[in-house]
Image (tube, rainbow, N blue to C red):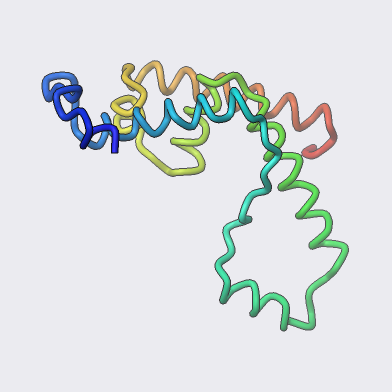
Length: 136
């Protein structure tokens, strides 16, 4: 809607329309989380049909599922607690499976910067998770 209301704000020489729209969405999300820090759970990657199949499976180990749920919760909290620049790199490259070049375009930086932020973000995550005994 912001682009439709003010089409002159987009400048083609600065990047693609996709990158511009992603930047707008990122900034809106950033403002929202700064004002309202919400503790929202992850979807855990399951769709509605897959959840029903899992519920019907009788051979699921309840203890294993509980451990997995605790691990996902621990990981989610660790990712949310990362500094913004590292969190963005981790989310785009690791969770969204975006290439360094695409992430760099969206973040308006070089691919080398994305790689550096991703490396640092992963190191911070590893430290946070090992301190909380989420990983060995």
